Image (cartoon, rainbow, N blue to C red; front, side, top):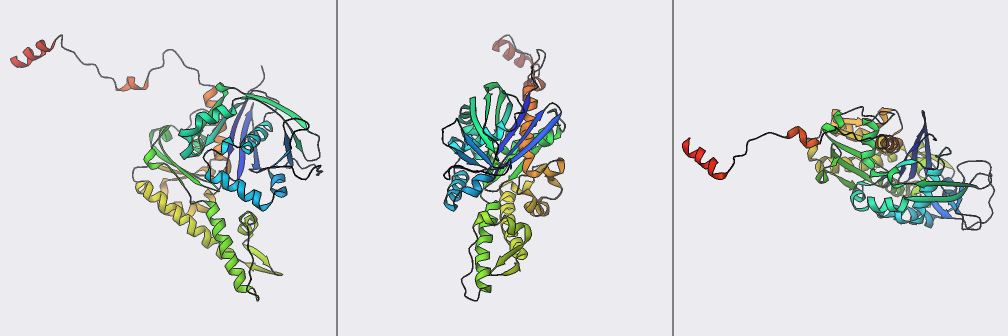
Length: 392
């Protein structure tokens, strides 16, 4: 019998993050979440495994994935794809979702054909669409991929119903922190106390409050304050800045997908000069970070009845100071648990796959309600009880 492969696949707005385990080894994978049709024909690249082409069989339409898709797509394609993912709770119905799921899962199989896999949905979509997502993914997947200048190779695997789990994205981080590397319970306190998991992504921020594995709906929501807002605000502020320094007063427009480098370096090059814009970048982060924390602060009733605020997701690093200032010692930072914040959900999903697949029911296990049962005496008849009462 082959060694099982446990996979956690977290398909997000900006990127798809996957963590897998086979035997004692863990693997992680990041692919930019972008899929576009091949409209340039024959293509030759150096042997960069991030240049990925997908097709179902020879002669079928080819699709560029990840880095290659970003490079070969037009601005309108990027905008359309990003907007559909951001605003549609049923993004998983799109062809692009299925392609990205197949490619990212297939690259982590290590020879297995029946992975044990967990995926996630945003907080506001989980209850309504988890069963539909399962139906979308269950079954046999057969396709070909080409990486770099290597030839196409066929990948085949089957997702069986009993090997597929769907949970909410923030809950995945809870399992990352509460379970050890083997999927065994490590921190029982997180399932006893009331915990709010704040999954700060690129397009949205998912806030999910749990008591055990039960979602507290009143204190769970999806916020539109996210890293994307920083990019939109920065794009606007850089246009204003370049207009001010431009002798012609024209300035320059910066598309949001071009701003990664600016945010990292704090610099822009404009008409032959380099300008320090780090203060502008920080002000944009501060505005969005404070707006997000204000919303969370009020929606969680100031966190008075919550024991822990768990901060996770790719945008948790820039927004952490605003959370720390507001919530203090209640804050738990997922990145402190041994893996980058953007992989916390994927790692939690991988651990969850292990924990669920190894759950074996036993005959002598008790129902949870057994712990609150109390024995009491029932009178033989109402008359007997009344007569007894009358004699008292």
